[in-house]
Image (cartoon, rainbow, N blue to C red):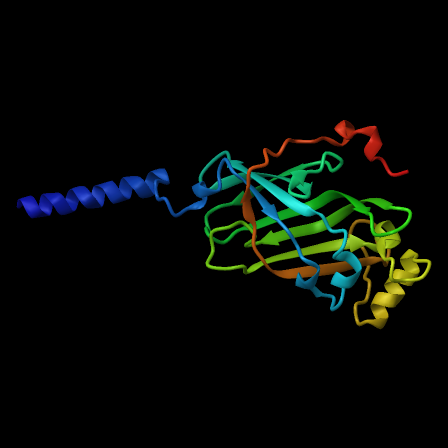
Length: 229
């Protein structure tokens, strides 16, 4: 075999070894060992129309800590919330798995996420502990060419109605009625069958790397001072 052919064979073998070992620099391993922060501005809430005016002031930031999964391109992602860029110890964290095979694309799905919300814009301050269902973060980890990330979630008006301060004397019924008048009809909740659930969506999002070391927080580890008064 000619020396040139030997060199080509060596290069091909090296490329195959890199691919087999995940040695490419441009893959999801770039996320492993890092924490990322996602902020959702009020103006980025797109569905239902105008929902950002109701919820934009109190939706927290979100933190994602990425670790290598058990096999292949699988990732283990711990999710928590943040206030001012720092982890909120009043919110329990949740761990899920996701695939890194579509890097720089990503999809993180959380079937049920406990969310601690504090609205300091109201007097007195309103504190709500709720569970967000089918919480999905699509392309929110950095790596793409721009901010093309989306977030969708299903909220239960029976749990979050005190936060809708623009509705006089809000209740789960009055919140759903007001939303229905704006073209966003509440539907039956998959988790209990009650007709008070609404799916919301935010677009044009992009996470950024954070220096925060996200710590796992179990529900029974949340300080008593965080509890709803």
